[in-house]
Image (cartoon, rainbow, N blue to C red; front, top):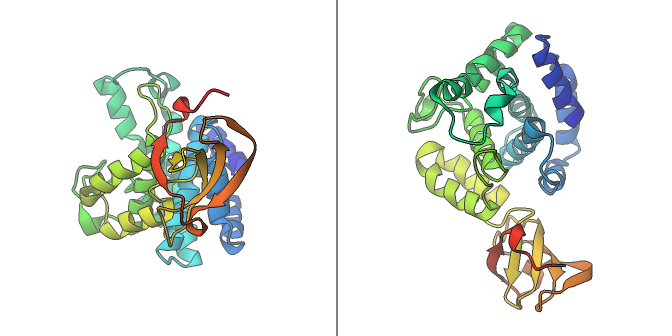
Length: 285
């Protein structure tokens, strides 16, 4: 996936066309092998790197995860995955000085950012008539149900459900990663924020499945248990979202465990999560 994302970036910067077939083939393998959840859990646990390319991978896998939960068939998942993988190609045309600015963007810079869906649509339009659906879909991923999105200010049913899935995951992934102008959100706080905002900006069905798939305690969240031990969420339980699988890293006295062990909270009735912890606040080694 990273190789494909790098190839797309290079071709866009050189004004060369994008070939979707290799991307679709890779997505098809991921869907048919039923490894969406495993790949997502692996990718989200990797320290942030590779900028927009890694963001692209997280948005793609997160969108597929929610789409699968919504019951999308293979054809629909392929469309969702391809659109998620290519939705932000227009960002590669924006100067790095704008994308990496450590402060509030000026009006011209903000306008450039808001134009990227149109630029993405123009780039993808070169694929030909067979991919007109992709152009329309990508152009809608920054639209919101209440009409507050861009570039067209669409509302409600005017927006494709696939675009809403990508838009919600794109927003979530942006929130939990560091940006030059702000610190990243803790994953639990990002989920809570989106559940509140999502009531107006995204379809209720999409928001509900987002919570089912991502969980209130997402993968890679650090948590404190009622016995004062500290661990990291390594997988979620859709049937019991408040009781994920935890890798215990520190004992109740804050001492690092030499050989971390995994505990499935749904199988441990005496243990439960009492708090989430910022990774910067973990005990010293």
